[in-house]
Length: 280
Image (cartoon, rainbow, N blue to C red):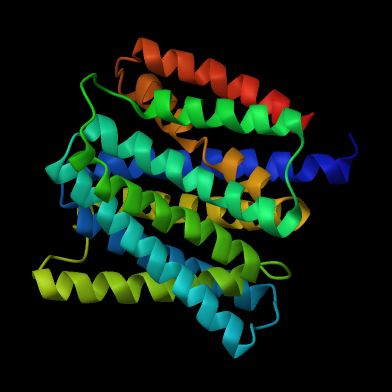
């Protein structure tokens, strides 16, 4: 495998590391404050950083139509976030997280098969193992899954999956401005939602350092995902990036001494096998 062929693997896994670390820091922050404060404050941090990077690198600005598509991707991603947190609040947490993650990873695989042709048989097996890995890693409790508990997680997964597809399509030749547009779109949707629900928006000063970390990790993850998409197939980039729950679980085990369940350990092994198969 040449360096160019290996690039989407490296960038896809790097996106998973960044996103997983960001989710870990965000999870720590939400233990001390409301989730809307964490989401909006971290996205404001990431927007500032993205604009600075776009200007500093003198990246060419997007045509208006692509800017709008990237903004739409951000809105859809924000709706996915809202659906996920709503499902976590009213449903089974052990169902919401894995269902949304698997659906999010599956959408780019389906779309990628239509626009880029079907993946190889080995990669398909790897994708299947990756889906199983995400499911197992995200599971934190046992219990029967009821149909009524699937609606919001599926909507959340569709939102995340469509974000992968749309931002990956717009970001074929650029990185920073597509992400700026997406962040403007997501923040607009979140500000409207918090205005309707009269939710607080900004984080307390004592947690600012943690929110800055979340924003930086989000920028790193999004940039690496776009670079993976530019270097290779949509489905490979999205599925590898979707392994981010493994990083979150590992960091929680390492720093917070949280217990790693047997299913999560199985998921980590499945993720490693999936990576090997996808890279063949």
